[in-house]
Length: 600
Image 1 (cartoon, rainbow, N blue to C red):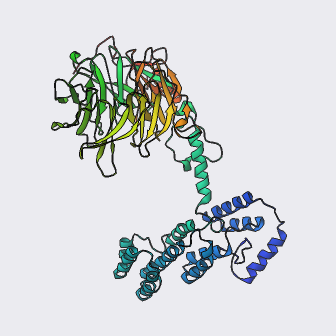
Image 2: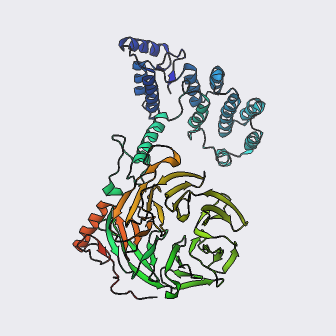
Image 3: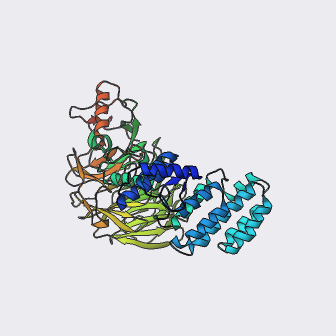
C-alpha cells in the first residue's frame, strides 16, 4: 500500500530512509513544473484513477514529477492505516484531521464506523474478548446510534464467521469492506483534503451522459460505460431513429383512428371507422437480423351500429385486447388476442358513453370512461365493480404507487389531470393544462406522461415531481384528436400525429436550456395522404414506430439502415411474412383493402 509523505510534500512514498533518499534524488533530477490550480486538480484526479487501477508506480511517478500531492499527509496516513487494519493508527490520523471536517458533528459518525469495522473483524477472527472490549470501550461511549449498537451487540453470539456475515450483511475483511469504509467517510472531508472516491470515473460518466442528452438521434440501450471516450458521442439517424416507411398496411376500409403495440411488442392492434379491429403479428427477421416485419393475424368486428373503434388498450400481459367504440356506444369488448375469442362484453347503463380505457397491472381489472360523466372500475371476471360519478373523462392511464396500489390518471373536460384510487376512493388534482386535453400516454417506467393539448403541442410531464419537463411544438393542430407515444430504449423519444399528414418525432433531452420553457422542433416523417391521428412505439423493437391515418392505412417506420436491409431481403425472397414490396419502397400488407379480410 502507498502512503503520502507525512510532511505533505506531495509525493507518494514507501517506508524507510533508503526510499526517501531515492525519491529525493529523483526530485532533483525532475525539473520543476509550474502547474495551474486546475492542472494540479487534474493531476490529483488522474493519480487517484491510476491508483484505483492498481498502477501504483505510474501514480507515484506522476505525482513525483508534477509535485502535486494527491492528499495531505494526515489523509494519506489515515487511508493507509484503514487499508492495513491499523485501527489505532487510523484513530490517531482521524484526530489530526478533525478540524478539516465539513462539520464537526461528523467526527463521531466516522469514529463509530471505524470502531464498527474493527469490531466485526475481531469477531470474524474469533477474538471475542477483544471485540467485547471494542464494543464497551469504543462503540458505546460514542452514543452515535443506539439501534445500530444494539444490533452489533447481538452479533457477538454468532457461532462463526459465516453466521456473522449472514446476519450482519457484512462481506468480511477480505471482501473489500475496508475500501468501502474509506469510500463512505470521504464524503465528510473537503476534496482538498481527501478526494471523493472514483472521481475521474464519475467525471467521465457525466461527460458521456451529457453528450448522450444532446444527441438528437440517440436510440441505443448501451450504458455510458459502453460508449467510446475517443470521440464525442453522436448516433447516426439512419441506424437509430425511425425515418423510412418499411410497410403500408392497407387492410382497413375507412379512416384508421388508433394503433397500439402490445406491451411485449409481439402484436399491433389497429382500429377506425370501418368498425373492425385488426390484430397484426410482429415478426423479427433473421435476415437481416433485427429488421421486424408485420403481417395480418386476425380481424375482429365490433358492429356497425357502434360507429367505429375509438380506442384500443392492451392488457399488461399482452393477452387481452379491449376496444371502446365511438361516442354513442354504451359497451366495451374484450378479446383474446391470440385466438380472437370474445372474452367479455360490458354494458352498464343505456346512457353510457365509454370511449377510453386503461388496464390495471393485474391484467384483470381495467377502468373505462367517457365525457358524459361515466367512470367505472371493471374486471374481466366480474364486470362492473365501482363507479366514480360525474367525472367527464377524456383519456385514462394507470401507474403503480409506492404503497403497492394502483393510481388511475384521468384527464377531464376541465383540462385537469387527476389521480384516482379506487381502492381507497381518494382523488386529487395533479396539474392543470393550458387548454383542452385531447389525449395522453404514459411511459413504460410510468414516470413520464405525454399530454396532447389542443393548439399547444405535446407537454411532457414528470409524474414524480409534477412538473412539465418539455413543451414540444412543431405539429399542426385541427379539430380532431391526436395521440402521442413515448418510446425508445431509454424512453427518450416522443412521437405524435399531426393534421398535416406527417408524423412528428422529438428527442426529449437533446437541447440545452431549463425546464418547461424549452422548445424543440421535431423530425417529420412524410408519406401519409391524410391526417395522422395516432402513433405507437414498439416497446421491444425500439426503432419501430406505427402510425394510423385518415388515408385508411397504417404505416410502419424503421431506421433507414434496417428498412433498406428489409427491402433488399424482400427483393431476393429472404424476408419474412411473404408480403411483397411495392415500387415506391413500401411494403403492402398481407390483407389488402380491396379484398376485405375474413371477420371473426
